[in-house]
Length: 104
Image (cartoon, rainbow, N blue to C red; front, side, top):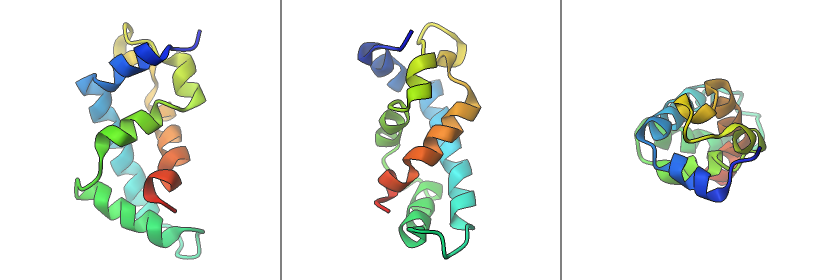
């Protein structure tokens, strides 16, 4: 059953979930910074990657963006370990949200 907005809001405040999103963002940042310069939107994507690695981005905004992913909504449960959300799914949602977060 899909998580309610209230449940997602609870998860957004969990320190462990916030830390996991930060790790996923930093993992993506390294890959994105080193992607081919011919990638569409690379300049904005790489600039955002630099901000992420240097801790100069809005982590809470990223947390909420990640929580909008369909897979996350369908598996999220604040009463389960890790909020019921797999690390691989966090990484997938980070990749899906990167361009909008970067303004690319």
